[in-house]
Amino acid sequence: MSAAEPFLVPRQYSTPVNGTSLLPLLLLSLARQRQSPITTKSVKKEYDYVIIGAGSAGSVVANRLTEIPCVNVLLIEAGSPPPVLTDVPVFARESWYTPYDWFYRTAPQAHTGNGLVGRQLVYPRGKMLGGSSTMNHMVYVRGNRHNYDNWAALGAKGWSYDEVLPFFKKLEDNRDSDIVADGYHSVGGPITAMRPTYTTETKPSMIQSAANLGYPSLDSNGPRQTGLYDHQATVRNNQRCSTAKGYLVPAENRTNLDILPNAMVTKILLENKRATGVQFDYKGASYVVQARNEVIVSAGSLNTPQLLMLSGIGPSEELNKFNIPVIADLPVGKNLQDHGGPNLDFVVNIPIQTSGEKQKNSSVVKQYIYKRSGELAAADGEIVQLFLPSTYVPPGEDNPDYQSHFSETTTDIAKKYFGLTPEVYNQVYKPYEGKPLISCYTTSIQPKSRGTVTIQSVNPYDAPIVDPNYFDDPQDLDVVVQAMLTCLRVGTTPPLGNIVTRIQTLFPGCEQYAGNDPEYFRCQAQSVITTIFHPVGTAKMGDPSDPTTVLDPELRVKGIDGLRVVDGSVMPTITSGNTNAPIIMIGEKASDIIKQSIVCTSSPNNTANNDIANNVLFYA
Ligand SMILES: Cc1cc2nc3c(=O)[nH]c(=O)nc-3n(C[C@H](O)[C@H](O)[C@H](O)COP(=O)(O)OP(=O)(O)OC[C@H]3O[C@@H](n4cnc5c(N)ncnc54)[C@H](O)[C@@H]3O)c2cc1C
Ligand SMILES: *[C@@H]1O[C@H](CO)[C@@H](O)[C@H](O)[C@H]1NC(C)=O
Ligand SMILES: *[C@@H]1O[C@H](CO)[C@@H](O)[C@H](O)[C@H]1NC(C)=O
Image 1 (cartoon, helix red, strand yellow):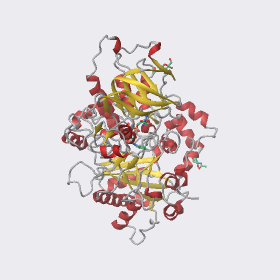
Image 2 (cartoon, protein in one colour; image 1 turned 135 degrees about the horizontal axis):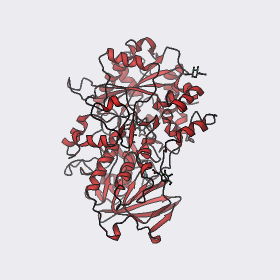
Image 3 (cartoon, helix red, strand yellow; image 1 turned 90 degrees about the vertical axis):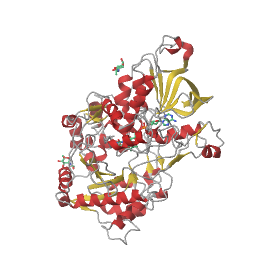
Image 4 (cartoon, helix red, strand yellow; image 1 turned 60 degrees about the horizontal axis):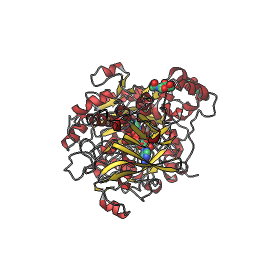
């Protein structure tokens, strides 16, 4: 049996509690929160705004625009409503390879991937209401103040840290009073954040070892980022708080918002350099819906560039390959940035259950049902984050360039989700099957490498070609090697060093190096890296006169009227950490920008209630 086999096989959504007697109780307890909104019964022929993609950003825009009663909006989503069990944080990976996942892989990598099947990384994306916010690991990180000041300096007027902070506050409902007290937070917003109420047996030692090494515990979303972040997660009472829950459910009964799942947009319609609507497939038929004011593309950093290119907006040399008429020659799909990196694993020497055993243990499941605590509250086993500077960062600057995620794991995760060659799995991980492991996952959070998203055909159902081009710039590899050395220091410093031991097995092809040698770590990182799925930058915003931008600072596609992009694609440079909160912020700020252009008049064309029969396109 090949280690890589499971990831080649699509499967139905299922979790360790499926088929157990605890399932009905668990579902009943989850029902206290609604995961997903009521969806539409009929679709009109035209709307003021048509939004493509109900993910982290699209859901925000749909909610905020329909706060204005004179505006009506259609939100079109390719995926379906999410399964209820996506609410349980520990089941975060269960939607991979299911119909709720786009099921992508990267292009073969040039600078890493010796130990991966086809040199390709597994690359899931959420395909459901809430998008990737319904699939992600819920780690709540805003990034660094310098990220946004840098955006503004690069020409993204209005996006400096001081200008985006109010929108970070607006999206937030922070439930930890010690964190709210630092002045950078707020309560009552749509997305709830709190520390998961789960403490792994190793966590106190981890925090103490980091402190012993001089890495203080702090709120990395507050005044300073550098140090140990005992992180908050985007959960509400330890149930996932996706944007479907936070933004779509509260807006579900507005008569000026129609939410249409299971509908795949295949093209943006353009007439005389103006977006007039979209073409989409629904239940086997193809439809056209008109947009009176704007089409807003929120399909995420991989599908947004694909859809723009299929519609004639992109680099002419790419479009010419497929005979797509060029409507706007713009650098769509360039500037791809992501956070990829290696893991350094430790085996836990105190007698504890593995994370897999805990998920199957009925007393652990009951602890979640009745107390909302225990292992099920830990998103994919995440424990703490370290944000630290490599030697490339000027001393004293609060601008960390690597992040280390500590998490509880097992060899099962490596086997099912990393895309390893059987050789790597058998040599490195197999000897540790059934053992509780701690993983230190490291990534360069300000990578210098740039990749691309391109298309392989004119068929919208073919996956885009995603090449993150990890380690193209050698500095990124240097940074992760320094980060791995930090993992090793934390894992060997008491008290953590007393209860964990680094796994002894070395990666195939790297055995000539001593295991603690930087050259060894370099070799390992060139063999296997995984990603934490933060592709951004493929429709860069900034100064319109800059030839590398696709969008102006108000996120309008250059040279096209009535067309905006609002999602992770717009970032000029990647933020220093996990990208969900920054992308929700982008949705909030974009909504604010768009609302400033809305003028309500009493003209019949501009009312939400023109629900007359001949305006109906179809009944869903
Ligand atoms: C496995 C995983 C773990 C992650 N962990 C974290 C984490 O712990 N913390 C964190 O901050 N971030 C995390 N992220 C990243 C974060 O979730 C994403 O950056 C963010 O959700 C992306 O938002 P978006 O709006 O750009 O795109 P998405 O949320 O992906 O939304 C795009 C939506 O558009 C839809 N769509 C695409 N094409 C079409 C089409 N043609 N027609 C109709 N609809 C379409 C998609 O189905 C999707 O719903 C993770 C991501 C993944 C995948
Ligand atoms: C929307 O209406 C339904 C049916 O009346 C109701 O059950 C639901 O709670 C409403 N949603 C909100 C957010 O008010
Ligand atoms: C289940 O978990 C409980 C509480 O953590 C523990 O005491 C018990 O030994 C576990 N049972 C099994 C079968 O592992």
